[in-house]
Structure formats: C-alpha cells, structure tokens
Image (cartoon, rainbow, N blue to C red; front, side, top):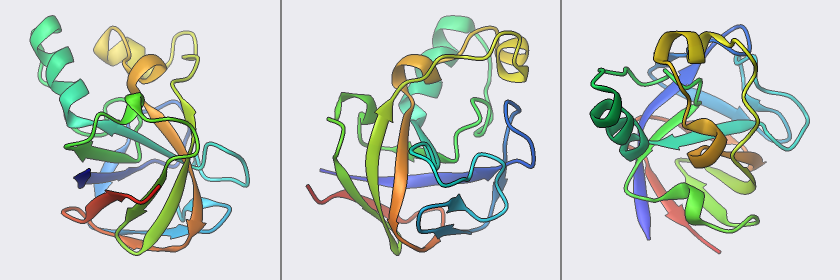
Length: 145
C-alpha cells in the first residue's frame, strides 16, 4: 500500500494552524526541524489524510487549507488511522514508526475555533522519526511493515 505527501506543514507554536513549506528535515528522535511539535517524545510528527479534509469540507460546507488541523504531513492514498501502532513508513528519505492514533483536543484551541471541530482526535496519527532525512511534497509514502 502506498500513498503520497500532499503538503509539509510547520508552526512556531503548538495548537495553531500550520503553514506549508517546500521541504523539511526530519531529525531522528526529534521530528521536523523548526516545528513547535518536535521533541524527544512519541508524537514527533503528526499526519492526516486529505481524505479527512474532504469529508469535513462536505459535512461542514467549508473550504479547509492544508495545515488547518495542525498536521505536519497532509497525505493522500492511505487511510492512516486504520493502521496498527508500530506500522513503519518510508517517507521521502525518512523512516517513521506509527506511535499513536488520535489525540485529545485542547479546549478552545485555534483549530477548533477556526474550523468548528477537529478530525485529529479520531483520524490523525503520530509518528516517531527512526531514520532522518528530507521530505518534500509529492514524495511517496510506503508501508514497510
């Protein structure tokens, strides 16, 4: 099963909408250099499928730019939240491990205020960087285990 990276998104603060960048360096045991979400923990990189955006856009009648849910990687082609914890991905030059599915949303976060509700609690996933490298939009996402 393969997918692709639609957008790479970062922000300087947690809990806010992220903005797209042309490429990013994903550091082992850290996450994206320059992103507020990065740290030596199990939620170094957040991922959300464009398919989740499309469902929200249809149900809420709104247009959502990538990064609206503070996801680092907007993806296409893989239903990420259906994969088991421990799934390994090759994304661009990196290898990442799925460590968490969903999360508890912050009360009154900028995303909920802007969008009205959030899909990250059920459809977003989090990964840890196992092999570092650069990821660019258009890079393939390949499930390796």
